[in-house]
Amino acid sequence: MIWRGIIERYKDYLPVSPKTPVVTLNEGNTPLIFSETLSQRLDVLVYLKYEGLNPTGSFKDRGMTMAISKAREEGAKAVICASTGNTSASAAAYAAKAGLKCVVLIPNGAIALGKLGQALIHNAQVLALDGNFDEALSMVKQISSQYPVKLVNSLNPYRIEGQKTGAFEICDQLGKKAPEFHAIPVGNAGNITAYWKGYKEYFGKKEVASKPVMLGFQAEGAAPIVNKKIVPEPKTIATAINIGNPASWKAAEAARDESGGVIDSVTDGEILSAYELLAKKDGVFVEPASAASVAGILKLSGQDYFKNKKGATIVCVLTGHGLKDPDRALQTVREPQRVPAKLEAIWEAIKL
Ligand code: F0G
Image (cartoon, rainbow, N blue to C red; front, side):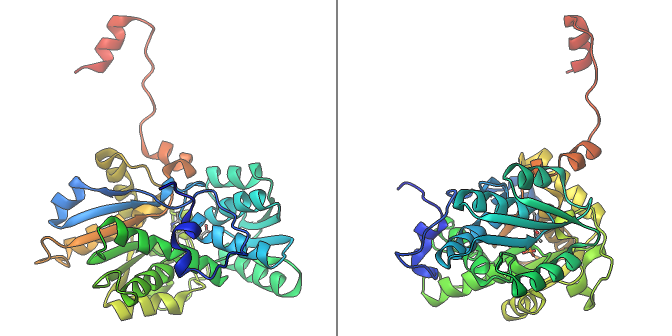
């Protein structure tokens, strides 16, 4: 079967009709990679859902194909979003394909280099706000309610609809089986909401016989749900999830409580060790926010959370590609060693 994106594949589960002008970059169909390293360490079966392999390098494309297709169906001329980077990159690309004007509001100086480059090259109007993501989101909510410009943040219900297809795909890839545990980074909390909706729908339609326990992870310096209070000045190296007042706060709590799961926090140090571990042992390069899901299961495992769960399956969503944030990668490694153009010197440096 030729892959034509998530709307074509899962249209029976999505609010689309034959009249919907589908705007797609063939998103979805990302690999579910078995991690030998993590499975051995945790004594469970750990799979990595590598969403960084979507067309713009993050899971946002699943939601954006829906939001932009529906914006076109409704006759919108322009779309707007606030973003820590990935939503803006995705909105810019899909709006370019749809021929819509795209405006993005980003916290000035606080988004990763690759994401900024993407929004700009796709010709979005990029406005760098003197303020953080939460302030940017509040601004675009007000603007889209007063002016004829469509909001494509995850408050737009079509975004959640598109993103829930990640859950369908995982179940399909596991052979019509839901994992026992689903680990995911939490920022604005749209994605955990979407996955839980997807798992519930697949279960409701009897595609799978069970639902997973949802495990969400925030960065310690930006953990409003964990600490049950808004963080006015969130701070983490995982810029994608540097959010102090998530839009889908309540829905994330519902996903946690209905599934019997947890939302916990991980430190920047734990995020960076998981980031390096994934790159060095699994060959999977992600951006720091994505590593929060792996940092989280390592933390829980240290507390014996997975004791007596041998044979259980955990899926970690790796939300964004490592190339999004090249600065962080270069700050984490040693500089290349310079060598003269001489065979002996090169062999000497290799030191097998
Ligand atoms: N991982 C990455 C790479 C992200 O870009 C985001 C969110 C998340 C995790 C968290 O997902 O917000 O649904 O809980 N990025 C948004 C953005 C906020 O603007 O790109 P969430």
